Amino acid sequence: MNHIRRAAVGLLAATALAGGAVATAAPSASAATPKTAAASAIHASYANCAWINGLGFYCGKYSGSATTSYGDTGARVYELQSLLHFWGIDPKGYDGIFGANTRSAVRAFQSDLLLPVDGIVGPHTWFTLRYGYQD
Image (cartoon, rainbow, N blue to C red; front, side, top):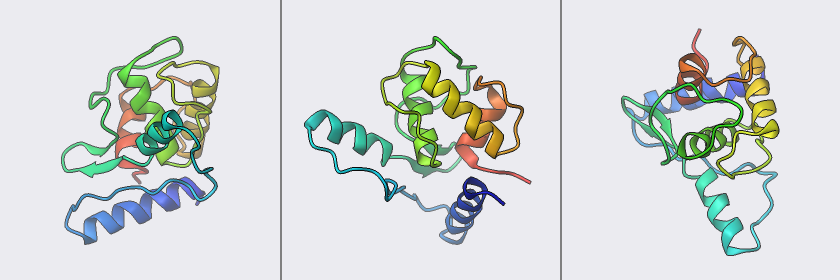
């Protein structure tokens, strides 16, 4: 079982044991300490994903599941980049732009979770980003 699935199973189990209480993710241990206000805001956004009953993990930017792909911009992409980081996949930026780095991160996430690897975030990938690995 890879690191993402282990983390997903652990987080889901912890949430279930806590009766669905809100769980907040800590930034990765390898994350550098932000040195500017902008970097602090980005760092805080990554760490601000929480469990919401009926929605799954939510990072405060977008709660839908519309297909999101290369070239898209805005709130959906901010949410996607935050969720990828939350699950330990570095999108190499938090800019709301679905570019080559975000597409590579999506492909890595899909591969790790045994999803079809196409670099497009459709309903199934959104579900897995929100709820983690499901057997």
